[in-house]
Image (cartoon, rainbow, N blue to C red; front, top):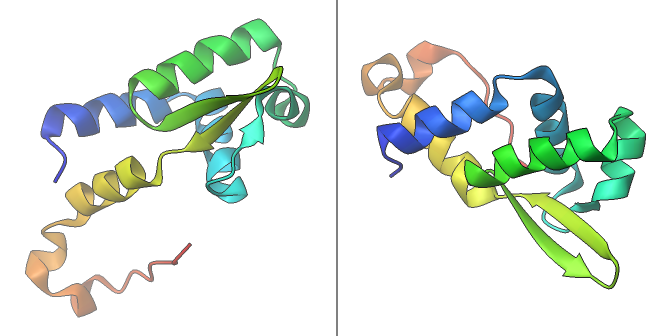
Length: 107
């Protein structure tokens, strides 16, 4: 279970439109991730700006990176994402999940 401070850091990192768009793109691409240049091209973000956003997301534990030749690939950290969602919904509707009436999509 994530600690409150970890959840706050992750939510703060996502509380910016460009970072949220980056994160949603990475989640959509799955564990293989995507090259930083492809993210920049798809979202029309300058490389220096993108680097700043990746650093913030990485610092919050939301993304991981790997070097493959001259390319850096970024992927969502699904363990942290799942932990954050679990923390936020831990006591949803007093434990009566049927009362929430919120469909949860599976990856």
